[in-house]
Image (tube, rainbow, N blue to C red; front, side, top):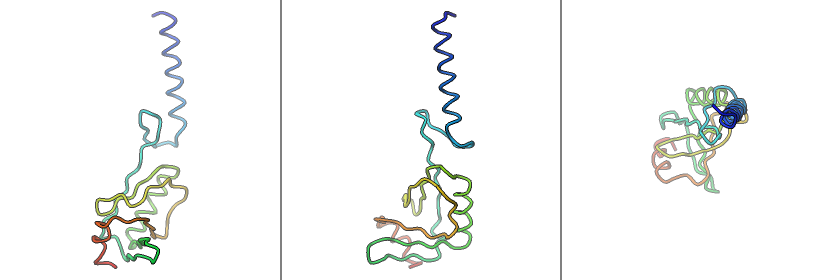
Length: 122
C-alpha cells in the first residue's frame, strides 16, 4: 500500500465517522448524509373527528389509541423528519421538535381521496 492510498482511506474513515456522530443515535441516514424520513401511517379508523374549516384546512382529531401512537412516535423521533400517511396520501411532512400529545392534525390542501376516506367521521 502506498502513502497516497493510505491517506485517502484515513480521510474517508474520518469523514464517515463525523457523519455518524452528526445525527442522533438510532437515526438512519442515506448515503448523501441526510437523515431518512420516518413514515408514520395512521389508519382512518384512528380518526375520531374530521372537519374542513372555512379557509380550506382539514382538521383531524385522532382517537385515544391514535393519540398514544402519535405521541410515542414523536417522542422516539425527536429531531427527525417525519411524514404522516393517511388513506395512501402523505398528509403532513415535518421535523419533530416536540412530542405531540393532543392528537390534532392540521392538513393544508388535503387531497380529495383523503377527504372522501374521512367522510364517515366528518
